[in-house]
Image (tube, rainbow, N blue to C red):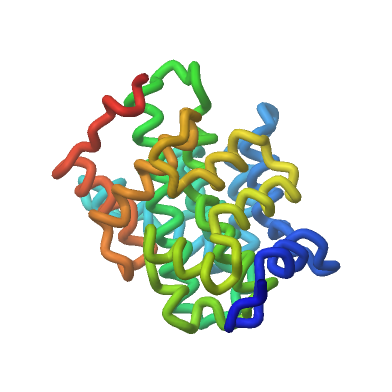
Amino acid sequence: MMNSSGFDRNSTLELLKFSDDLPSLPDRFVKIQNIAQDPESGAEDLAEVIRSDQATTAMILKFANSPAYNPTHTPIGELSKAIARLGSRETVHIATAMALMYGMILPTGMANIRVFWGHAFAVGQVAEHLARGVDPDERHCSHERAFMAGLMHDIGRAALGMRVDFSYFEHETGHLHEEALIQAEEECYGVNHAEAGMQLMRLWLFPDDLAQAVGDHHNPDSPLFLSKICYQANQFVNKHIPERTPFDDIADSVEQALADDPPDLTGLQS
């Protein structure tokens, strides 16, 4: 049945699945991931990709000079030194988030885009922290995969905004959270963003556990380890990290929130 918004489940799924202009992953995102997964690549290769984008370079330097990574208050201005201070793993995380922020053209203003990807980056950081705490030997999943699940958990919102309803981020639905958001999306589109995101991840050929974690990130009863991690990380960020925290303050805010109110890991250990 078509609802008052003009969308129903079938039409929404068709738009998400069969659109000729299916959103693609940004080139820089793909390059950074290829470098991260290539044992032959190193910091110089990473720096070369980052250096090609002024905004990402500036953000890497901001993070490297932030209190979370610069406790001695020693400023640096060179990208190579910033990468050395942050480490390759954290540099990849920041650069990956930036590649998505500036490479996926969401139909909304830059302020909303920064909020969207800032939240995603925070969830990625918390998801990795949870994975390290409960699964230090990476028996259930790699810590990098936990970060990626968190970073991509809301990608279905981007899919709805880019391919179904260009006004998604401009009306009230786009600013809701948790169950209120799920209910509003299902009433409006017949599909919620978690399901839309899972479908998009599969179309992009991501591993199925990553796609499933995106699909389950609002489901507290999922039996899958990565889904549990993603769910709890999202809950933690919604509770502790203010929505409009500047992107370059996310690391400090997450570190402080984790120190002030350490997450309960017992539900993740079963």
